[in-house]
Length: 259
Ligand code: SF4
Ligand code: SF4
Image (cartoon, rainbow, N blue to C red; front, side):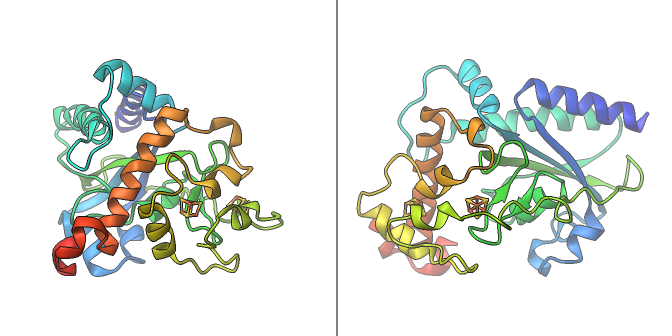
């Protein structure tokens, strides 16, 4: 029953454009996380983490066809996030109908998991040691982690380690065009990154619709987001950086209230 339920869940998510689907052993994930970022800290009794994401623009197309024309990005307007929650709630209802309780978490939540590492554990790709984003074998950097469900117990039984790190390391032997693509040298090519440079550069009105670093990566280049999606997502990453680095109106807000 559990494998058929898993297949049904995956098919349902795939229909909504959530074409990245994986399960992670919560104990194994938690073993390498700080206390506040552990699944079992957020949801006592959690044994299984169901991870949902999307690669390419499939999810975007589903969202647009369901939502209709979008307004301009704004800090208080989150159509993509809302669509992701709605689709995840559908999966949650299917689990609930089988007596499996779960808690939904999103990357944007105040208390949440490290979704980049969660995606890696779910087998969605390998975190680049150069630019620190998740690279998928097919979609490259053109993926999004949308949500996770923290499931009580292990309804699908023992979970294999799905990570790809031992066989997918695209940054090794790469010429690293991503490094020179950034006009302010956010990444030094040796693993160090200074995202405050990105925040200040963008806040000053540069890199308006896209990140040249991401675009320069040859992995998954054919799966690049459609232009509207790329610009939309890029706008929200600027909102997040302005808040984190205290730029614009955020400079009046104490740091502890911005986190
Ligand atoms: S361009 Fe090369 S080094 Fe840079 S993220 Fe892509 S694969 Fe890694
Ligand atoms: S958005 Fe611009 S400044 Fe920021 S990392 Fe990308 S290319 Fe560099």
